[in-house]
Length: 154
Length: 102
Image 1 (cartoon, one colour):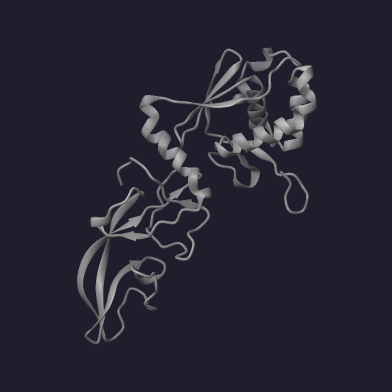
Image 2: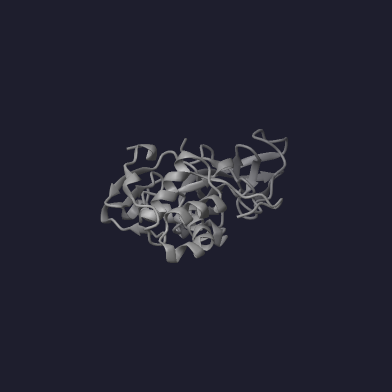
């Protein structure tokens, strides 16, 4: 049933059809994933939730926990950072980049480790989760990805 | 819908759709959204055409001119544009440049 070319719809008589109509059918068993699919189409609303959230402030976006570290420079606290696989250390509060990669320069120290809840991005074309949690574009997430309200477990 | 250069976008049906006939209508299952859509005969014929070859709004309108009842043919252009938007928003058709599910 994977090819419309095999359809037997040729029996429809030309010059007889009503105006085209497309309806979406509800199904109780499909409801959770249907809402997920609807979510995938909602990005035109332009909603951009905070990329990182603390667990105490869990929201309804599709998130998963990621490791973060509290960094200091020469004894002075510099904030909590996420080691983005593409951007290096990024401050979870204002998305500013520390300016170095995974190796801390001299004078920088990891004071403690913790967790934050990061948005999970989903490929709109195939519904698959992106492999890496990455900030994409901190000032405006990539147009090809979207994170969703969902009942799916991360 | 025309591009910036005035040419018409062409659309194809997602290759991974699943469907089943229901009388003259078509039930279509979208494997990513898990939505099931019911298309009447005219909409189903257009989706079917999109599965065979890329279609633009004008080519969809031409199909509808051939298939619609006499009193609807004058509205074929508008009906085609509206149908294209519906099918596209539901993810049943995609621009040729973004073909998915192949």
